[in-house]
Length: 167
Image (cartoon, rainbow, N blue to C red; front, top):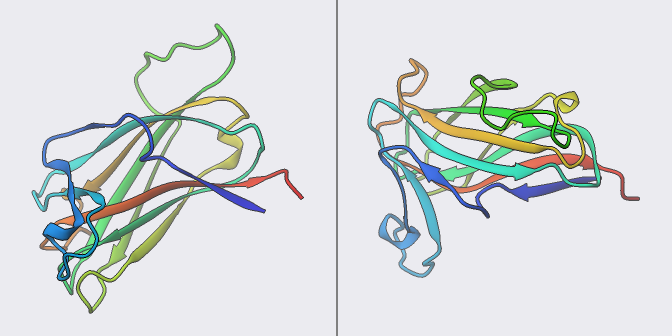
């Protein structure tokens, strides 16, 4: 069985050109007012920093699920996810350089503006352990030659998907 943790449900720090705004600002219909994270089309790497814990029912098989949309109808968005796993009590510093893993991926815009898009980035399950702290950085990589999307990316969800030990 799989479970997902929304990584956007905690305290988040952003780089320049990433901010929250009501979805209705970009949506055609002004019905839904929930907040989204806007990643500007700036030609730079812009992103979010966060922290989460690996759940007690974690057993492996992990991925990062990115739920996004855009007003553009052509182009490709390039994404990057870096993370560092710190486990144990009084055994590792939370203040270190580098990461456990860097994963990248791309996803094409829909031919219809504002359609929900999802891309999954595979993570190495053996990097994680129950109760460990995960420091992470998620970015739209506008410096990547693969990022050809000439519009903002609107992030609706960022989920840590994992296998669990429930029946």
